[in-house]
Image 1 (spheres, chains in turn green, cyan):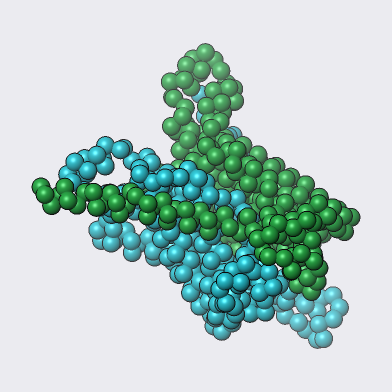
Image 2: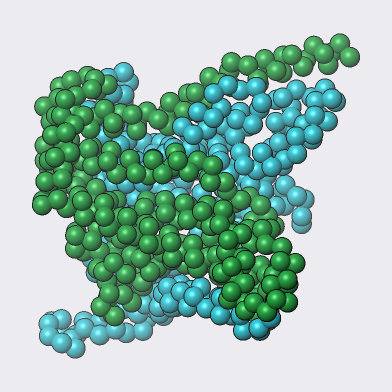
Length: 287
Length: 290
């Protein structure tokens, strides 16, 4: 008994006191530091960037922004708009397809159900690499390479989202509600639109968010598909800016300002939607 | 209930699956078995034609020294990323879940924040932080982050920074789903918080840890964005640093689609073998299945 009561407070001190808080704060600082640094770096004029202390706020922020937006007739604006089209449109379509598929797989018993589900889920394991080149070739055959569609369409089907939607539909939609609707004579389409989808909204928001971020952050697919820099998303645009910056350090302040501005919308979305970042990744995914 | 309803609902997914998954995979396999043959001087129409070569391209991909060097680099990089990233993710998730920690909400949001930063932007930020002329780190620590050997660690740091928060959140959500009275029971038995973490929480987390590991293995094998973005800032990263970079170079710079197709299938096969191999090993160990 004495041994136990002796050990308990020590255990608390080691795992519940200052040390864990300090460890977490070190982690938090490590994660925030580059973002804070780019915020400061974006405020510096080209001269200040290399001369003033790295953590001293500069005076050139608005100049940098004006210059960035003027850079090559405002191509940065185009990149931002493109990113919004790819990520917003792609995530909306992807969420719709995932919700409808997940609902069908969760709430209907039909021949071929397991086969279809396993095929779709098998897609998780297919690396993007294997798909990128033939997708590019197929798109160029039908004349759609280097178009918005080439970046938008391949990102709609997202096996993992279908899987999440299925779990969510199974848990959120009571069978009795569907049966009641059928007895009242509602069509299957109407049942889905009026009963199932409204119940699935919170799950769909989560899927939308993850898809939005995934497409916003994607580099490989647009990098391969697009040649015309007017169609680039921000990721590929920033990369080309960095490539030209390799020979012209005078571009560095534009690159840093661009990197900072490209983070703002995502961080804003991220912070306002905090409560939706729930992952059911772990629920039964590994048998 | 109409029998056709579920099929109608699944049509968009099946059409997309066929067009953007099944057809491209089939086409890659087909391409990988061809080679372009040049007759004469290779000028004019019809002087280049595709010939069937079977598994020659795969054999070439498997015996390509440049590619093997890429694999070795990615193996070292991947091992580093997996161990550090998942180790930190587990540590942070356990710390967040232990009730007595302060500033938990702030730390959780801060550590998850890099998830919102695209790989290109993340690499760009760290790349500038590594540059001697700009780096606040270099003012304190005199290390060449972009040297031939250090660059792997520097790149691993970017991946850890970007991935730790997401994995932490997966593990943390799993922990929050565990009924609290399980811990109460352990506490009544005299277990310390540390013992509860080791004996109760980690075993419950095993499936989630396995899942995050498999996803991370697949992601690190395909590493492309970080080395490609870092290349303009240093000359220590070759254009074939990782296997996927070689696929890109073969397909779009050298114009040898057939080699690129074969190499990408080899990459896919290795991802599958490694993730399934890993699953098998841990399952045998963790669950005692034969």
